[in-house]
Image 1 (tube, rainbow, N blue to C red):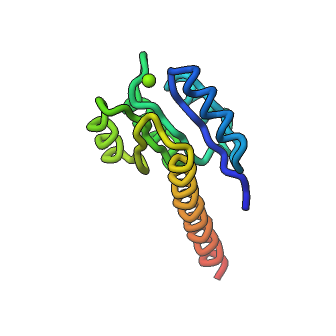
Image 2 (cartoon, rainbow, N blue to C red):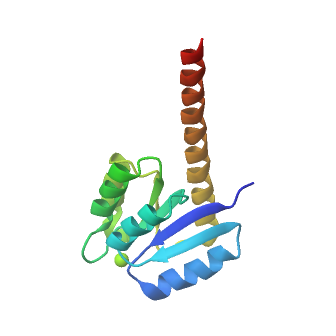
Length: 143
Ligand SMILES: [Mg+2]
């Protein structure tokens, strides 16, 4: 199985560094950035990113704004919202605008990995369907 390419976005550097180190021990390629703006740049520069784990509460562009921009520019990338108890409603709003799921902080690493895996599977199936549709379109044109 191809390693998952994951982008972590959170303004809390110590949290992000810890989780990055722990995830790198698993079958994952991890990039980590500290803001929504940086996340969009990273997605633009790295078209292989499949799943984004996105903090809800960040200064500047918040999680919902970032999610909206991601879904606009990179609609096939799956996003998991990361939230504290105070912002669960925001995470739910996120799912209404296209987030795959949400996770409560502090999050258990196994739960995170499971959700990231589920999101990756959804994305890869979706990608396959698009490829199949393109193939059909091409073979249809040749008949
Ligand atoms: Mg935060």
